[in-house]
Image 1 (cartoon, rainbow, N blue to C red):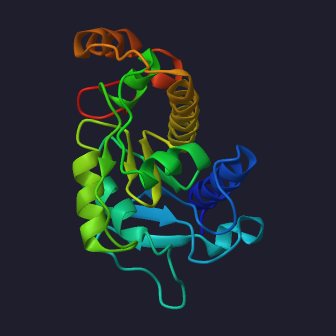
Image 2: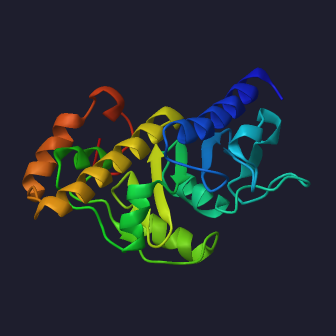
Length: 222
């Protein structure tokens, strides 16, 4: 393992721990990947975040192969497929944060209740229909929900954030959870006002090149 690979592996470990520190994940349910070389590095299956090590991060080819004796996350398929289909994406984060997952449990997309939704690439965050975890069907549905977007919900499951690098993917995940919390509270107060597609399109354009919004946000976005 050369210095560059070790640094990348350490980045995946740090990002997984950041998910816990941000309150976006608990236990072994989340997973993190980043593009590396001609493939990706991904967190292993069933290993608590506190026990992750750079040596335990699993290297995987875009053909789905990985070294014997290692076991990648059970969700490796959509990580691999997102990175294969979206060359602008350099990292993928999947987690089950409370508010994002609550909307996913209801199968509800997040509409443009706040201009920050533009950070995800358009006027909504879609919710992919349910499919069992780790399956090709789930990966296909996730890719469809991510078309032109950097984030999506997975019905009865959780959320995905795809960014140009690990830092941005984590930022997107945190922004999505914040927006879902705000939306949940607003629904208790009344009927949130929905911004128009034109207003969100304008904001998407204004976000281009702005701070952590620079980089990938979907084909039409940030």
